[in-house]
Length: 438
Image 1 (cartoon, rainbow, N blue to C red):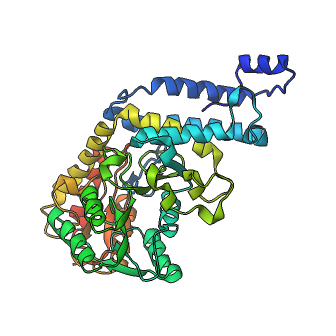
Image 2: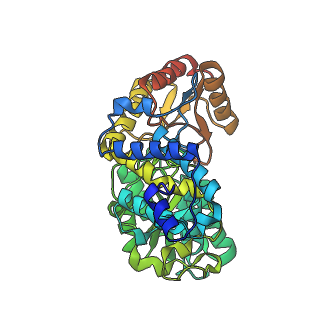
């Protein structure tokens, strides 16, 4: 959203005796660039072959650690810069909703929510903007209302650390029985469903289940809809961590079948850092308590489930541009491109006896994120040594992950801007280093 007043707005304000806000030359130039960018982002207008030219990346390093957060494409970066100037210049004049032409903080928040709703296929009233995916999920978990002391809550080893901590909090503070289980390896669809069925069967007092759509540790994609249905048949609610699923895989929120979902908008949607989103199905909003007694908003609104406080306004304002960029690439083309990058390196090393790929061959069970282990990699120190070797000797950035029952892994995550040369460099490095721990 551009809230630099237009000439018409300025003249109208002056005629009415209102304040005339003069924008800086720099802000006007950025606003003009944002308008051009927005007009150029037509759905399916950016070919995947053009993606490397859409980003400004650090040269000389093969960055295969894009699971932390996504680099903004240049069009989003420019929009963010413009909004940062606008917010800094107009300050509370904008935030207190007195600018001419309807430009205000409230309007910016509505536009961000509408953009996210368009992205996932729901109504804006089911979306709240948060500071991160972790905040969204922490609020869903800790403020889940239908939980009594002695009820069980379930999570697995592949869930995200912050979400596991929130589930443990339910045990410490609300008297829940916290039940943890390990995802099987190999994690075939049958094995995954069997593991969830087994833990639900042996936990008849279960009330809440955490399901991670795509594991941040290994990249495993689980059959969320089937698990949600399985839990619902037993009277168990499910909270879905879709941090690595939204805008990475081509699906709509209803495809998950879940009532409660949280994710990071600064991951695969490529919005600025400090943006996340919470989804609550409209008829279930009352089942999540308001955040910290947040009575500044009506209790029936989903946004009351988000902690009050000042947020990064410019980041929120840039969300619609990020969503436009997502559609300009196209969800299906984006997923296909990311899978192609992943498949190129995995297919080249899968037959190597010293390299273990930590997800199955079934395309339904993996996406762009895929982790591996080298033979002899048993401890965190081993994994750290592998990560260090790849970076220092081959200029390839990956990241080690702990918390997997079978042992630590090295996570590989190409980004939208990544090239075949980046993943080919990893293949060459693994051939050279495959026996380093043997």
